[in-house]
Length: 238
Length: 238
DNA sequence: AACGGCCACTCGTCCGCACAAGTGGCTGAG
DNA sequence: CTCAGCCACTTGTGCGGACGAGTGGCCGTT
Image (cartoon, rainbow over all chains, first blue to last red; front, side, top):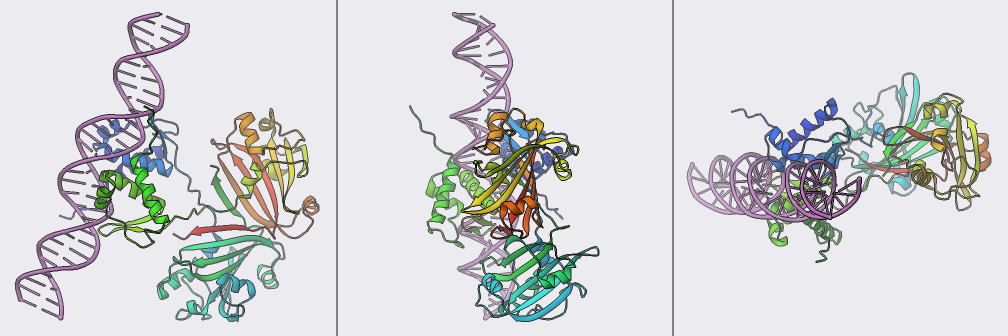
């Protein structure tokens, strides 16, 4: 009796309709079969069909009009296809070539502010250079409070192959919940000029990573060369 | 028989629970009354209670665990509190002081590319300076294809009091659907230096506005001084 | 031709019921 | 004391039926 796990029926109904939309069988603007037709065609109860259609409507696949029918809108746009440089920075693995510096330093003012600690509190700093092909594509500097770093390998000068996020998750069971980031345009610092090989303006990203309780786990400063780096975003207008 | 319109029951149930969460009666982490309890308490069917709870879960107010109960998470975060400079640019009204220039020009290469027309096609250009207090906070340049501008006031040198978006909606029934934008860091152009009164690096925003069919209605280039301007964003990490 | 009412069809909401499946505590056998 | 099994409770899913309300076409009256 190795009963395979079957997904719930309403999910099957959703998938069936999604596939017909993706395949073009139901084109945008088309009217879907009525609920009663779908009931007959798919051999399920109306409750099930309605729940599937309502969920699809909430996700933006279709539009439902009282008294007229349900109409295809198309695959919903994720709306969240924005590039998240600060997130990738914590997820990318480090390599001996990319890792520039690991040190215990006293927190500069803006870092202390981000971390919510007193100025000049000792913190761990890690700096690396991300590359795309041969060109340096970002200088990423991470500051970690000692309480967070203790017991992990963050304070060791060896590269973290699995990336900061996975490492903190594995070793200290810390979960990233959300990230706040601020983007500005600025001149690169001296170090960044050296590492990037250019003194053109950079996108400066300041970010803090929070756990589910809102505690700041670490702060980050990224320098992205204005070109070729571009942050792209697509969003709906009401 | 002036039957007032009553919202559907499941919405009333949702509101009741939301209010109890907002008021603190149900604190984050608390277990909600079970479905059967809510059925008795509110005098509705379980279908109704379940639909309300499922919707609340989808919106992030609560979390449901099979076999254990439903638990309060709190008011969901909008997650979309990102500043959208290109959107506000099309919605802000123009004034005689802010409007710098209106002209018919031949499209520069990058504009032609954004609009999807041949280089040097004639287009309408409008440029204005946004201010916050006394300080200029952005230089906004909009390019509009002639087909779009014809019949509207976009090609006239008078300020559009109601903003570009409302004007196009009212006069030509054009609907904005979505905007794509790319952010880079760059040096300001000569004109921008004059208008901004500073030659520090700027955030350069290139954006295109699309109608529901995907057609490009207009293109935009914004120059935001690196300081005090900052684009802020908060986002969930899976 | 114009209008109004009727009617078939659509989705919106709600109910009661049923059974499956996950959780956790109690209890009795060992 | 320990542990397996039972049981009460939870949510998950599904069905069929019922009524309300919006839409649009048909058709007869005017």
